[in-house]
Image (cartoon, one colour):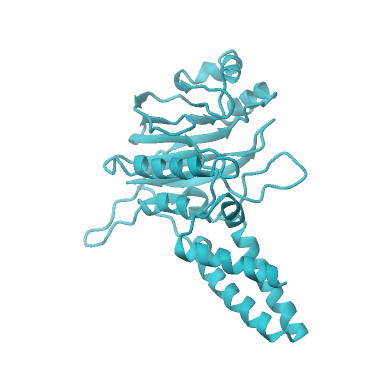
Length: 316
């Protein structure tokens, strides 16, 4: 009981103070909402058992934890401009060992999105995808395959204008997408995992933060596998640049994207779409990816509604 309370104290302190700690702390931080729930149960149990000191400690930590959770529960994303057509963008972590790439291609043909962002994109994946029906509809591509989990690619029905991607450990892409409501910037990312590459993970999140905020004049979408949840302070620093998480804006803050396809249901969201600088999300829809350990999602993005005269525009 006291071990859970002590763990809760460390988590709450790390969230309040922005501690990044080490690989172990990063792993535990992803479980913050579950620990807050567990603290509430311990409070009830200690009250029943009349263990007053433990009850006070767990209840105080629980109240602070609920205050940390409240912003994502009651989040209110900015609205899209009236009449905006929007662009549908799909995020797919292929898993570099995925044997079911043909099934993924069929799935994406059925979804019929405007843009697909792939992570863990290998040369083998590329060879099979360009030989599939998916290639017929997505003639604009920026492809940076790599060994293992390094590769990334953007396939699009809309014209793409490639920019220099940020210097991340895993490949990243930076493109302008010529959408029906005007061009917007798309930054496709995939950080290393903090469990095995803690410092490269931190460095990449910092690099993504810098790259994401480098062009505030461009409506921007940052999308992919961040290997980070909202509960990692380094991830929230990207939001602080002026971005909104599409799942949080849609009321899906506690949805998970990993691990998928196994006996344990997805319990943490590592895959995100972040909108900012005049771009907002209007919907988001999760779906399973054949052969992958991540769920995919489709997000619709559109220009933000202009602020009324005399008011301050909210970051989107």
